[in-house]
Image (tube, rainbow, N blue to C red; front, side, top):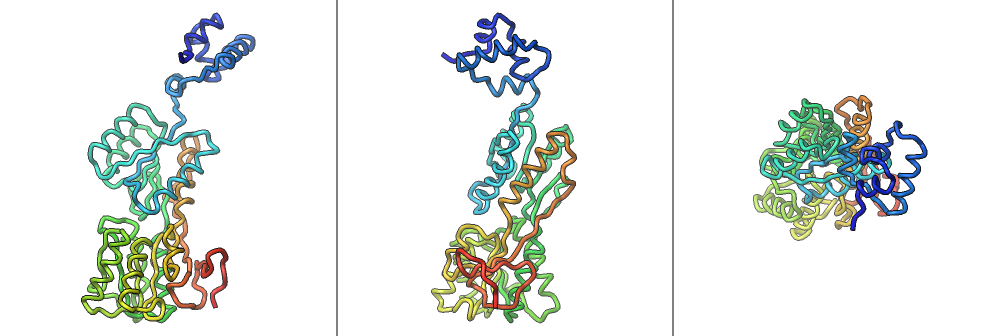
Length: 352
């Protein structure tokens, strides 16, 4: 049978309240009593209930992480960054996936209001923003990871995706590509929307053309990217540069271009977004805008823990820089600011 706090109190000849004070590191227990209680706990293999300790101390040492979906290609890397950021702090992680504002979100909010966590880290909360603001106003520390940089009015960490889009445009321009096409994710995708703004702004006044007919929406999947290129080709639209708002979609786009006999990067230069797993293994390997997903997660975790431990946080919102990872889907050009070259899988080589 599981050893309880009552068993420890009986064996030590003290009250349960005294055992509880020892568990919570209270200074108002004499050293001899404290040593006797700790010795009995060791002998019996007693493991204190985290919930009981949390109720006594008012802290659970747990961070609630709210994610819209675990199927998003970059989500595993971001969540690993959160876990890495929390590891040295002694805080645990309670993950809850809830898209939109349905019952799953209500269950998460109820658990938060029930003091199951000390703070909340929300990834692109979307429809949950109003509830998070309410919790924040009630005194709960909340921090948002805004992958698209959309202001929530809450403390936030994000990536400078507008600048990332501008870098993608600069690379295509440097490669001499002037007839541009673009494949976006769903209209609700904040990362793609922000990146598109930076991309189109940078093209303005350069002589490059991005017509509305050459912008097509996809669902974010590899098949969606394949279908999007098929639509462009069926419409007999000419383009020599393609910016795709996601590496999975870009992989599908490359497959469609290959089947159509369009040479990459000779006839069409392709730039993706994210630098997630598929990017280095497409044919040719994908040039992409790297978003520092793991660094985002770790920075968000550290900022939230700092706030929980009485610090002021990093202010906000904090924007992490993106960079270009140049592989095989764009032709060699002069170095672009913020560019990384990865034409070999295991080494970074200069672009000539």
